[in-house]
Image (cartoon, rainbow, N blue to C red):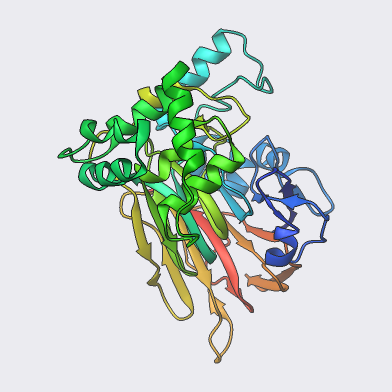
Length: 387
């Protein structure tokens, strides 16, 4: 087993000392957005006393990942575990599927766009389906409202927003109004932004108009601040989860959670950000009608284990909470697993060997060593199904 130190990503949308409070890492006094656990080359974990995890995996891919994982994904850990501390809204974005990511990555490579170029859209050739389990009450925009719901809200907002109501009334969803928002320019863009800036809402976090006003204050002049009127506003209580498939527009607004995704950093943005926005690419990747967001609760998967895994998705997230009778047995599987300690140390034991991870650290259990593995404290466990 490997004990891992994990990278803290200090994006501006992170909560001040947010990961310190959630995870138990040392506070920085600034925004702390994400803790990354994995071997993604952008911010790989470091093996305590050794190399970065990506180098360790390349040095012994079959030993760490197992033959099935290497055959399917090559010498890389195909999932990435994160903790998010969302202090301010993220951009409106979506993620490509595998074929779209491979094509987009190849296209930008052929064009000579450097991986660290701020105008680059595709950082790797992989899909990024993701599961988020809330640790605190969490709000997000995810997927489209029905056409009639959006039409009513746009009409109530008035002005240039009301002009969009007719484009979605009676439609299955509000995608046409969403397209109009992110494609708007010139006078229309200014008029839509003015509607957003004049919207205040009730001040309640569950009121979409409240979020319109907040987004407009953070991004004046951006008409996509009206997105809460056309995208569904969801609230997740602690322990509840959301799955975001490829092509579904979304934006996390506030809260905190544990997130598991396929190991990718591909984000296609459409607004509400100072970063690179690629409207044409986002619209080209929009999922077909009916491809929606899945909200769900975890399911029992043995004593002390709760499983978060929507049907048809390879990634698996478990919350292990040892019962009063003793340690919690971790799920078996062919590939490796990551065990993350949040807020307190966690000892992982397998094959007669024990290692302890301090808060914010993780343990990687190699393939072939997961059988009979146990933990002595509350932990989050990431793995994948390679069948």
